[in-house]
Length: 84
Image 1 (cartoon, helix red, strand yellow):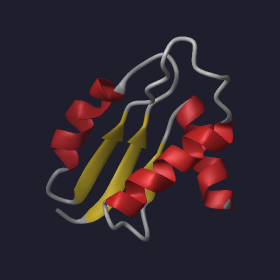
Image 2: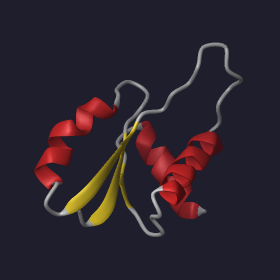
Image 3: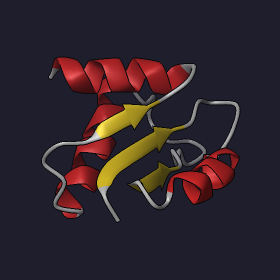
C-alpha cells in the first residue's frame, strides 16, 4: 500500500537484493522491484530502452508519480527517467 517506490537494481544483481527492503518498507510504500531481462543474442540495449521498460511498467500499474531508488546502473536509469 502507499506511494509507489520503484527499486532499480544494477547490472551485477537482481531484484531479490531488495526483498528485505521491500518487506521493511511495506507499511509505507508499495514497492515495485524490477529485473532487467536481456535475452542472449538480443540487439544492444540502450539506456533509453531501460527507461522505456520502466515507463511501461509504471503505466501498466497506473502510477503517474513514482519514487525511485537505484544504486549503480539503476541510478543512471532513474536520472534519465526523471529527465524525461
